Image 1: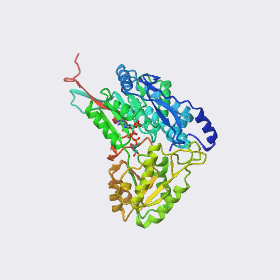
Image 2: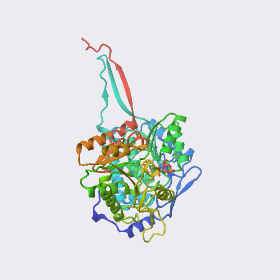
Image 3: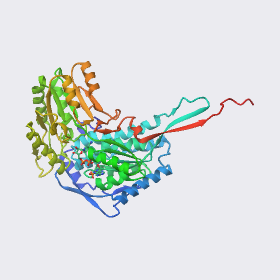
Image 4: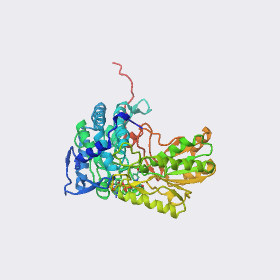
Length: 513
Ligand code: NDP
């Protein structure tokens, strides 16, 4: 994890609470370089999951507003103000954006925390620094990528070049608003595309601040647009727009598949989908350090209150280590500080919305009905807060992997434990899932580790760890977890098209006079 702050940089809860009260976030659409309300004046309410209170009302982009944003993006692309700019110039501007994100670290972190319920400590030490690093990483990469020359006969020269696609529509979720936004917009912009971003309705505020910083950094008008709004209206309008060349989406499988329909019914635009998971943490009988393993398993699911697409929500454990491991995981869960996101001591913040809270608590009832032993799972309220969406770390033990608890994405701090015997059964059960985003395997045998990693059907497999990651590695899923990859240099594949330029050189001999 990225950090630019030390313990000495901690700020007291009282200061954060008063800063939050004084915040006046930008709430209007950002189109063609300017903030403005929606054409029809529509807005939606944004509540803080910290205490359920109304934070602000945000402009809701309608179809006409999305059309304006896409046309501004397409026009900027055609004019070449960004798409044909020297790569070093795009690198300079994006590096400046990354610097500005760090200069505005506390404000961005506060917006992220009150809007999404992330603990302010995580927002300052992880979310904002990682998002800024992502922008810088693609800025630094873009002028170090070479194109190709094909092995033609001597009578020809064929250049294979990467060109930006045009207008990229990015539709993002609420669980890691800034980080996921950066994974999408940084490579898209670095490659020369124009972008229209539709943030999640629950978390528009950090995206709008990013728009302000992007303009300050020098991204030309029209190249980066932000259209907060309702999914079925603004998201759908983007998905169906004939001038959008690519949709990059992270969210639920149902909505992701909807984007494939929008594409098929409009211009056949490319669609890349990251659709969540039900990641298995496989623990084999020869795991040596069960204390470290338990710590990792617990953080693998409870971080961000379990609202992580690749969260390790299934523990597939060998019966020979089951009792000790589960006792330890439950114990770690009890030690985690669940509390007010504006307190830097908090390790686990809130569920993102009242609707998600209801959904997560509903799964505790389902687990009981399916015969699981339930540890934790109750709603709690930190001292001093009268409302807010807090759920204790939860362990469902004795889960049948084929039931709803074993198969469905809960998206809360809930771990489903299934007991197996031997590595072969463990891997078979781990693979018995519609999803394939990530998995881990714990073993002290390197051969078993390699064999299990090869067999596990997941976009990322960790060995003796969980969630070790960085912008340098690709991220995405197999099976229902989606298609395409965010992060690493491979992300440029998603935002560029290959062009062949074939030049006839004729006989290709030197003139004699
Ligand atoms: P959604 O898939 O509904 O939302 C993701 C994005 O899609 C948001 O920007 C949303 O806008 C937009 N959207 C919603 N409906 C449409 C539509 N009809 N057309 C176009 N765009 C649309 O996820 P939810 O927020 O509803 O979460 C539901 C579940 O999805 C979670 O419980 C979790 O299981 C899973 N999920 C997975 C994530 C992942 O990282 N893969 C992230 C978030 C959720 P709006 O916010 O306005 O609805």
